[in-house]
Length: 235
Image (cartoon, rainbow, N blue to C red):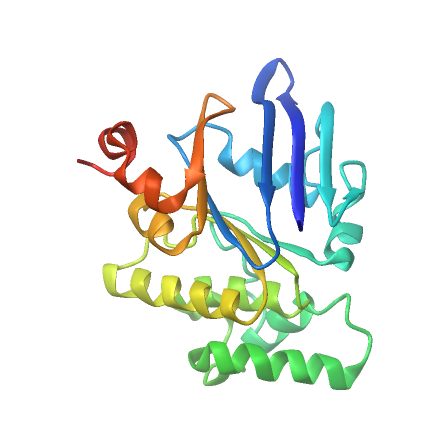
């Protein structure tokens, strides 16, 4: 098991954003979190990556409690978070953005190897290494955000709304890339507005409501669940 959340509670001042939430991920799995806006999905990812700290409960990565670790230490252990909204550095080149993602990699040859790997996954980035991030299209910026995360060679990739704001043809590209990254060994915890697509590529899913797990199970069973269809799949 690569990840386990054990009854975590996260507050923003008096707002109880995540309530006694527990989940598990196996090595090499794609697991998706679905739910309405404000259900606690993004906060759950932030609690894993150290951007917010649970008031109680544990976040266990490969059996070790990381719930009190700083974000940079969590990256060094093998977790990388691609937040909603891409958040690339618009005034830096594509190459410079990618190199920032390799801050945990000390060997220049290892950085080059990681860069070559990212360019293999995202050929468009390879064509734009000297271009400023802010001049890229929305889809290319999303590729850059994911590529930057891959530079640290994560064992667990946290993806928050990777298809948000993208044209339908680019959404398909992004999901194909997520499949490829997973096939190369990274486990992926995916938060995604397109619940149907997310469940189509995931092995398992969790449905969050008001900060708690309302339903969980194999992705195929959630896709066929009548309540899930009505609430999240537009059926």
